Length: 211
Image (tube, rainbow, N blue to C red; front, side, top):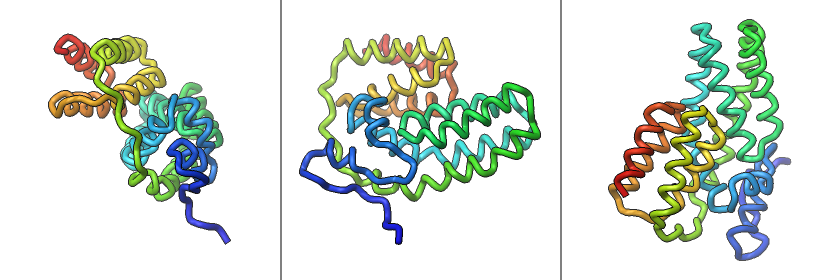
């Protein structure tokens, strides 16, 4: 009999509790290595939980409209996201969709996409334990580090480097900051998640110059 996914507390440390998170298909250690810390990894899982339905619906719309360019961009982003959370199997399936899109094979994409998107949607209830997970204290604000990460997002957006932009954004959100700046960073995060890179680059530049 299967048990509900949960954090297995092997000791009192946050890192070990995250490393022992049990979600079918996901390797937390790989995700932590990719993100850089358990805290960033949990933040990423929370973000993924929040965008699953929106991203799946958008991808389905692109496919229904025969927009292979946007479809390919969307599944590429989801492939990267799955790799970042440590779900190699799902990442590989999104890679197959990406190849179908690049090859211009609309029928193949329509055949494969429903099962792959269903697999992503199935993750949502499994990620719910992450929503209430205790986090480590945020890093003290560093103007130099924050400006550097904002410039990283500008450069990544210019090159449409999804993985680089998402990684920099995750790090940005770990810094303690005032309410106004946090709202701007959250808006920037939404733009990065939505692949609105022109607007994301402009906002990152504006924030960088203002601090």
